[in-house]
Amino acid sequence: SAAAPRPKSTIGELNDTEEYLVSKGFESNDLASCKKYLAMVSEHAARRPGPTRSAASRLLADPKRARLSKLDEYEHLEQLALASLDLGALEDAESACAKLYDAFPGSARVGRLAGMIMEASGRHDEALKHYENVLEKHPADQRVMKRKAACRYASGDLPGAIEELVKYLDVFMADVDAWDWLADLYVAARRYDRAIFCLEEVVVARPSAHRFHRKIADAYYAVGGDKSITSAEREDALNNARKY
View 1 (cartoon, rainbow, N blue to C red):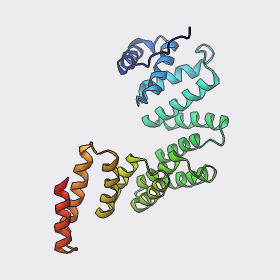
View 2 (cartoon, rainbow, N blue to C red; view 1 turned 30 degrees about the horizontal axis):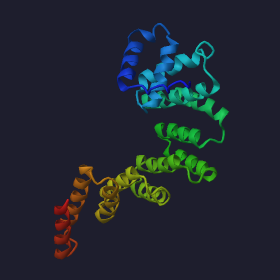
View 3 (cartoon, one colour; view 1 turned 120 degrees about the vertical axis):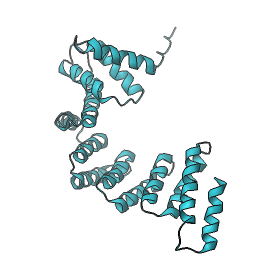
View 4 (cartoon, rainbow, N blue to C red; view 1 turned 60 degrees about the vertical axis):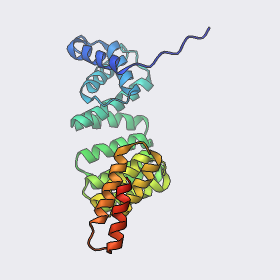
């Protein structure tokens, strides 16, 4: 009979393995536990850069003894690059990314990673040009399009970030988190009417998430305090705020 599927790991198992590695597993170069740990990090999309970097570095230093396939090596290189990026170890991130580029020269995923390293180095203009080049080859790549908006925001270009995110949502209209982010950008730009439009999209998608009801009420209250509109418009905005 077919073997039962392996149950998914729990966060508790992830925590226990991490505790073991940090206490003695890394020191003893326990590659099996490093491999197990990185699999769980990937499974739970956990962001634990310190132990992830340590585990990936040890596996990649001895891929034969760790019994890594080529696919395993590429996955651990990406984990190493992202963890190093989080820790500000940009040289290590660049080194891992360069190896991935050698293996996948036309990959949008690796291209996004390279752009993130440029951003972390403060080279926002270079990163934006890089993302544009990636999008020429992969015009509807979701992560690269979203990253471009984040890059503009990080560089202090609020109108540019809004423009990029609007373009992104024209393609990926179901991304509720992006609507929420765009609402925040509109609030920062004091364009409360546009923020309300975005938050209405969020509330429709997540009606039971009360924090979004509070956010849309706050936006309506902001409109209600705007002295440049008519008293009737202000009263209408305040009435809408009270509904939420």
